[in-house]
Image (cartoon, rainbow over all chains, first blue to last red; front, side, top):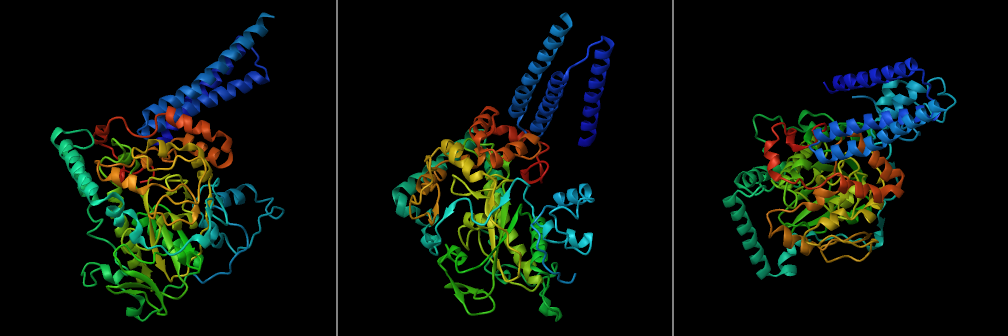
Length: 93
Length: 471
């Protein structure tokens, strides 16, 4: 059953990425290489954070799970903010 | 049974790596360093390549990571351990006090329903420990089993007039590993008995019987001695898992005595292995919990784990959530397993979490290992971290229970979250992060559970209280 949950989770993440890319195309924004890199790393950290949370709860270690999510999502959010600022700065020039 | 095969000369490789190699590198196979010495895929899968059970980041090495001076090692009289010399080291008066303190704590826990020490906790402890002494394995299978049991077909090949099982050493190792996993052991290793490794056989067992080598074909025992035949012998070593969940639910770790249940379990595994070997036409000399030799030493030599700050073994897969290492001597030829290096010994030198958490102060806080033993209870011969067993014993038997060092070890993790594997890879390959890993282990809240009562709310407790995915 667990594989099905991860399949759904992966589909949601994949769908969000496709929607995000479509949205960028729609508003005419092109990401440059380091923004794609940060986007990829940030997404990976979010996925890893969620995996840590889910499996730590299954290991009866809730504190470790939430700490794992925190440790990985904070850098991910910073990366997404950097992407946003970078795009904004480029668009305003 | 398959015919015996010629040994191959290529390096050991895991089944997974093997499949990866043939799957991804088929075209490049001829040009690669992989030397194809098999006649068929089946032959390859049945070879020693399929034997390796440790993760890829665990290296096999020729010598244990802890420094050993074989010249300093002599056969040890197991009656010198603290279990047999407590009165000598602590005094009769203190032993009496300890007994009283323990009884009072037990009474208080039961009468006040103290979390982790209430009546149901103690009842579970007693039930889990059943069989530890009652079912202690004998020196040989015949000493333990009831040969008249009408429901179990105990037999030897001789009774059918057929020869013993004649697999290759590699096949025999694999057979024994599968059987032991079925009986409940978590990992299995093999060491050849040589003049050097014979030094790790106790000279006298805790029951007072001398352990001697004689020019006989079959091992036997009398009221005075246990006899090992002078012939080619191998030590089979196997780790006995202990419930990590139960270990971490207690004031000092170990609310309902999971170690007692693991000790009871090893008695059954020892005896079952003896019966299995007997059925294959070979000997299995074993006994009660630690009747043959210092278990951690044999575990380290056979690559089940590395020596640790606790002066016990830590497994790369199971941490120190293993109660002991079962030992059985056999004359069935097996392929030996080598010591390993997973970075554990190096990690222990800076981690110190077990020693810091030890309420009795028994574990060494030294920065560097030493050749100096802490007392006659240590058999010595390694440059290690020797424990003050008298302090440990004093605390252990005057308090309801203590397994703090087992509960807090950063290596004690279940295997669901990917993070644990990454941490272990880092410890094995990138020791510069060891300090951060120790700090994060604290920050993530690993170690003792805050409320032992939570245990009783685990309606989906994994089988035997072991890892959800490994039990």
